[in-house]
Image (cartoon, rainbow, N blue to C red; front, side):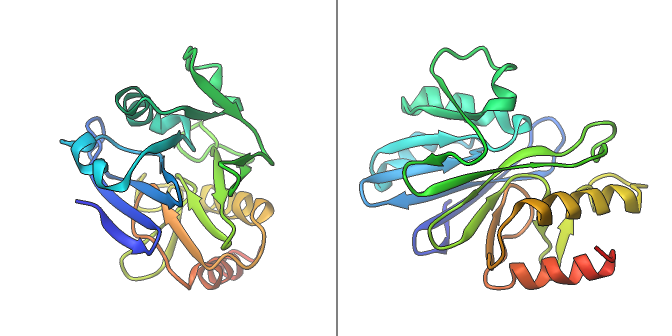
Length: 210
């Protein structure tokens, strides 16, 4: 059910009930518990998580992944961290808004990413990325790994007929925000990339002359 990506990071995948695409959640283990990042719901979640200890936090990266995070927070009795720019849409008394530059659980550094134009229809990318002390990134929707190892940028392979300008906007948003040297990334969709993330970003950047 949970697949190890690295020694301290596990993932699982569930088809989205509304749109059908696969959604990935990640479990980030710390010395005294774990955090769930953008968790989609799955059957028997509570029993499956029991072997990992206590849930310290549920961390939402994108407002579009709200449903699973809200329900997991309620079931596990764990605080729900919500991007400040998305918190106005929640009406959750126990939610903990966080913003660009904040550190969550002392180890996850939050970075805000926003595209300049609409990427999903009229909607721009607007989400948080978390970078840990090993310079690994947890990413929601702005990009996602293909099984071939290629790095796709929203909305590639999601919206037929998307424009190059939309893809360029996602690449630009990512490279403006993220620090250099991040070689491993865990995604809300697609396939996680270990050791090749910065290389793949550079290949796509050159492709679009950015």
